[in-house]
Image 1 (cartoon, rainbow, N blue to C red):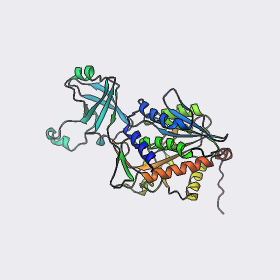
Image 2: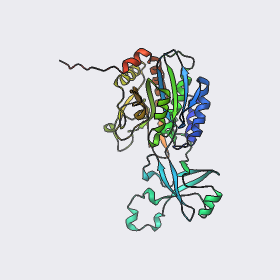
Image 3: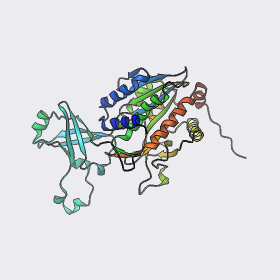
Image 4: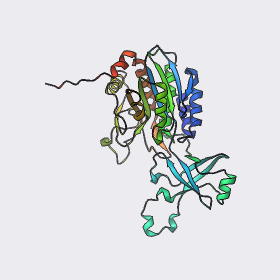
Length: 365
């Protein structure tokens, strides 16, 4: 990963943008992508850059701008905040997380707390603390101070705080919001890598909104663009940690981008998947295969637009997604970028038209 990519990932992951509040991330996208083509937005907030090549098919390359977060549900009389999730959280990772509460009067630090363990009853100590029993402490002495001085009100959004940190092995990168700032960075970096190179299509790099609450921005962005094919960029599940294994798919950090053969919302276009495999083998790009039975990506909405859009989800194995911190490997980013460039250069009109043709498999004799 070169300095540009590293700096871009740092800025994107340290910025804050929960579902419905993606403006800061969209601004970074606009600033970095504007050199490569005109920038536009849909009415939901997704942002897109159109990079024209030769006259040919429209290729949509989305990464979602939003990260999982929280929303204020109520302020109690003592000034503590009760909250609801924005996106899928696992309750066990919540306690003691530092958050920012984004209010009309500023962004205030807070921490997720619960009843101290020292005063728990014996039967309570053996139970996982549930989210409904947690609260966010913003340092207010009462409800009036939280609401009037700090400007907190029901509906305010909260995000986690975590610094981008290269680890002892500098290729291992620790940060929040890799899901899906990694995809956003790739969508931007693709434009840079294509540069002045010829490509037989029009590329739409896209930052979509509200993916974590139902892939909503992908639907409106696809309706706006009317793509002929889509390469969806998102993180994937890392299975190289204790308790996992290949039964859950291939997800070893540093072993290449993941080509998803099935997720909870989309079966990839088989010809497009074959093309990705062939190009990876031709260019000696390491790659892995993933299955995501209980999750999905923006492709779930995009591939069912209009009469159908051939789609493939390309991911990068990421440890500890849907928590305040995750780990990715820079080599996976670089190899995903190489594969994207190769695919863009190969998606001419004839190839894209062939993706929608029925595929007959002859039985062996």
